Length: 108
Image 1 (cartoon, one colour):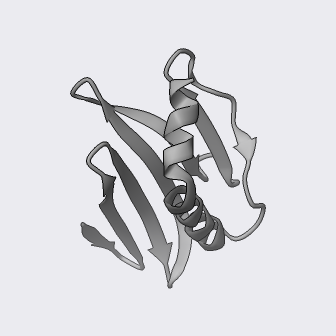
Image 2 (cartoon, rainbow, N blue to C red; image 1 turned 90 degrees about the vertical axis):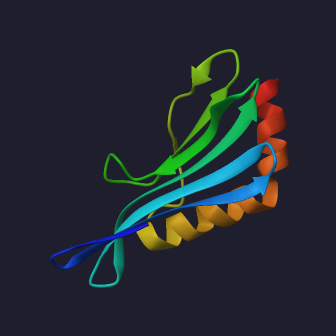
């Protein structure tokens, strides 16, 4: 989905990774630069979707939150200081390369 605001563009999409995992990506660009984003890995378990990892810049800097099945959302960890667009692309690449291990860690 794509929404255009004056000078800004919002984009979001779901990328199926397997029958039990999806990558959710949302970002806003202004004049071609990413100004806000979230990259979320989710897994399906017992007919419900559960958050595994969240990468975002909701607090003005790049962060990553791990989630666990037992304890839920864990404290934020710094993720790739600097450019939001670069961090968003790195987060997406990290999930694509390691989502199976991330889901295993969530279950542990």
